[in-house]
Length: 270
View (cartoon, rainbow, N blue to C red):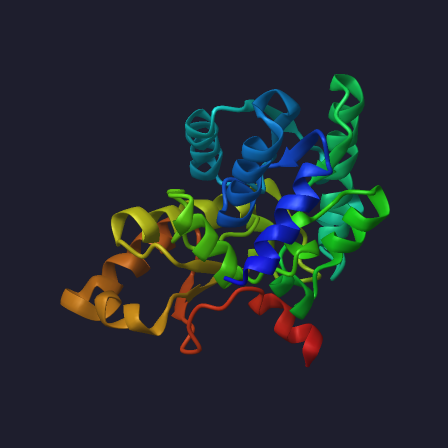
């Protein structure tokens, strides 16, 4: 990683003086939180995790474990994007309304406890895809230090390794709403279906990097192509199909294009 980027990142964070960090437990937000604690001190940093039906319970549990290791204050804030029809109707800019809710809550925390800034873990990669949440962050006055310093996802992982963070090789994650096609309403029921299906694939069938895209009766599984063989080994696919049908899906498919972040945005590009 270029030393100039590290220097720029350190300067950006130091100049914050104090910050509320949007903390999801992913590789980006964990690095950002760790660096904020390192350069500002744990009394000047507050980790805030947004909790709603769009967040897998396993991810919420992991955030609690991570903040203990980082040794920083942590609050879990219930967010109410599910009450906003602009979000639940699932338009292409759905993420804007979710992040708008998040940054409103973060600003309330910053005001309440006297923190100067709110920050979140966007990176340079996020500029390459459709990310309306970044617009919400800009409008709310939130800062994205990793993005401002020009860090790529690869560089975030490299720096995480250097700092000995357990998330350095953690598979990328996204909110459960990203599994629902645009225009299909987001409900607690279909979010729960996705969460249960992905938990089965991750923990029962040992597929750590996986998405289950929810197309009504169809569950479209995205996994890295190198994992395809394990899915078909010893007729494992039959058990996967059976388990997912018990969750309410009628047809179970494997996407031959494999896993890719933001695949639901492909329809927008088309």
